[in-house]
Amino acid sequence: MQVSTMETKQAIIENKTALGIELGSTRIKAVLIGEDYEPIASGSHDWENRLEDGVWTYHLNDVWTGIQDCFSKLSLDVKTRYGLTLSSVGAIGVSAMMHGYLAFDKNGNQLVPFRTWRNTTTEKAAALLTEKFKFNIPQRWSIAHLYQAMLNGESHVKDIDFITTLAGFVHWKLTGEKTLGIGDASGMFPVDGKNYNAAMLKQFDALAANYGWKIANILPSVLNAGENAGTLTAQGAKLLDPSGCLKEGIPLCPPEGDAGTGMVATNSVAERTGNVSAGTSIFAMIVMEKELSKVYPEIDIVTTPAGKPVAMVHCNNCTSDIDAWVKLFRELLDISNAASGKKIDKAALYDALYFKALEADKDCGGLLSFNYYSGEPITGIDEGRPLFARLPDSNFNLANFMRTLLFSSMGTLKYGIDILVEKEKTRIDSLLGHGGLFKTKGVGQRFMAAVFNAPVSVMESAGEGGAWGIALLAGFTRQCGEMRGTLEKFLAEKVFAGKTGAKIAPDPEDVESFRKFMEHYTAGLKIERAAVENLKRG
Image (cartoon, rainbow, N blue to C red):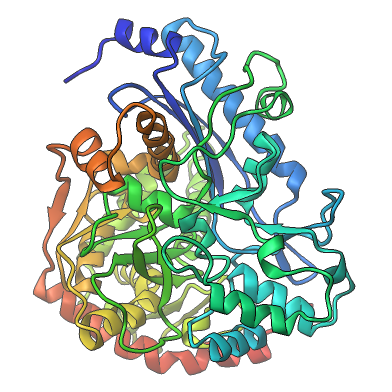
């Protein structure tokens, strides 16, 4: 049922709203939702990670500059649409990129620059912990970063009082609470469905016996979806809104990672449901019915925001290389149109190039691309070297070029998917896609169906992404004060009732086309490794 502007205004006045803020890899976005859980206002701020001294990082002052700009734009949107000054909301949720390493001392001082999920510098620590725990610990997990710092003999480790994720950091500063939702926590340290795995905590304490802390005491506490995670303090309100309009005392839901908010935004929190998030990175998550038969380095075990186990295939690289090529094409077109003063629309250019890929040869003309801006642990690549290669007699045209780039963005993901589907016989009832790769209707979705050899759906609402997902989790926390229910029930009955999304079944020709590409891709990994070894900065 369509909600009127007058009803929306009343919901804002009565705080029957929820605000979600997500810090993604290239954009910070805020979404305000109303009583029907649909977005009623939004704001965003573009930002970018930095490679400094070989470390992928973000500066924490950029975090607050970005959040404040984002909230200011959302407030302006509320003012423009409804003539209201946004002074309060019903609940707030914070989400961000998972994993990484933010370490602080007892005075709250940051000990080392933020080490993001994108870094691939913890291979030794990840391997040793995986062997010790008999549980896959990926390089990007917080515990791998901590243990690698210990192995490196880094002096800051002895001074650690608290480690957290980006979402946990922002939530801490807004509320004073050092806590995380279980989905985000499961990407820091293994969990058992309710809390950190007690046996593994003891094993890690044995490794850290020479330090003056216990691992459980420096990790954030763990909360489940629907639980109250504190309230906005006066200092937190000023951090969000330096103008002083926003009031303190607003309840917050547990902070979550982008994997969890992606599950929520696609209604993929029940067993045998899954989703694919495709943006700067790409990851697929399938909610499992049973445990995997063995430990696979290609498969991470995390959880939904409600604590259900999830098999996750995470790849560090997806659309960055495509974006770089589109930027180059746009620069060329701007030069050619300079005389007329005409500028090509960015979205229209993406659409034109993506649709061109549908005209390609089934073997991509023999072209090959690796989209590795950073390393890819799944394929054993330590550092990023974006690479494009072809033979002299390859059919080098725009259609083949674009299909190659798009297939490359999904190539590494395929290795993990084959393990789940072919080796573990994982069953998937529904699979939903979200993220930038799916913005051009029907293209990324069609090729992703070929990767899984299964139907893929995309919902219009999923375009709001993780900011909408964390707003829904904030809304769930708010409604839990009025009525009890599971997260699955809340999403199915209150948010997604009657919404199925546009579904595309796999085309056998696309499936065969991707199979041929993967043969070429797998063989070409030797070229990528050689590029890492021989193509050095400076």
